[in-house]
Length: 163
Image (tube, helix red, strand yellow):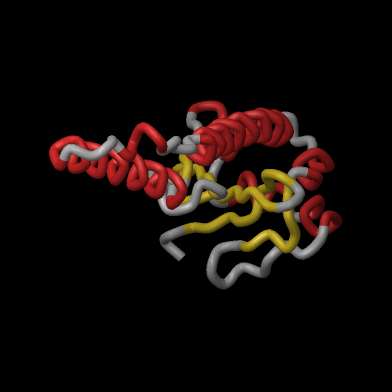
């Protein structure tokens, strides 16, 4: 985003400078200035690629949860998986395999939720997505969180904002 702002600022400065020199009778400086928009284009491509990568990840993760494919879910998770306040985090793959129902069935019906809803991008951080699922009372307070790290997109946290 900073790069895009810099590109736009440079362009506006060039236009203003060119108009000043044209009024003062000098040669337009903008004629000799080339604005590099490659940074802005590259930034847009990164965001698009990131969204495409997340969508591919989400389809795999959702399918694995729906099929109760514990190994696939574990391979799409980053350990330790953070849990709601007062609930011990899940530190390893074997622990996730043992606690699978706790993560995806105890506080919410993740299968039903994942079939009906799509995750939303975090407005403050494009490397994070989350999906809010309803608890037994129908309140969307159970949050599954996903982050993009060096190993790609991963499931990283389950939170209940009521706890």
